[in-house]
Image 1 (cartoon, rainbow, N blue to C red):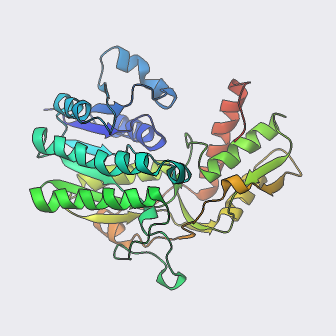
Image 2 (tube, rainbow, N blue to C red):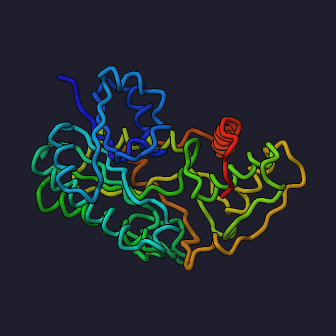
Length: 336
């Protein structure tokens, strides 16, 4: 019997890459949850299959709508669940904290409650975030799973709740729920509210003479370990298929560590334009920042054998190429 997978947030960067991966590497029927207003750009290559009633089924629901979530889960009856949907922008969470907390914490509760009712045997991946660790002292690097939570934004606080709700369902109801804290991951389709993506977008616009040769930035001193989104979705597939362990929680991340400044230097070095300047924009600075995000991924790598495969420079090149293509296709693009 064909297995069914449910991806919440299927139109996002990670959800759409996971869809691509599962279609290529499994014979599963894929169910995707999305909001009615979600743009379909990231899954546009699959619209013919969707419209023809093929192996991809879409369900419209919002994490704040209990009935819609229940209808989605009841229709999908998934064997595997990848809960990726969230209000995922840390900067936005400072101006919309209640929406962020409701969407991410109570939304996870609504989804897991529906799964408990309609698909209690499903293998479930709840995606938390490395942001739960927040402001970590340098002496505690690299960050392992037992590091104390010290969230540095309403978004990070919401992901602490997401993390704990997932583990609660595993322990209280004997459901196979596993939680991941994925560290910085990026690549094509990354939203332009994130640093590396807005940098790449600005550079692409500069190359097309749509902006003066100035990249506007926030905090460049934050230290990050970078992973490619395509390595991330491969990890998520391995998580649910290689000895899934109820209640387990894992740090996942890449192996290239550098500051945001060095990441920007890489992107500028790949540009066709010379003499690009950098200018700090106060609007891009967070009130507080998780400035040391370096993971210890030993636990997950030991459990699954997963390793990052895509080099950092390739990830940055592909991200820049993604924005070059978008900018060239859209003459009305605005800067961010």
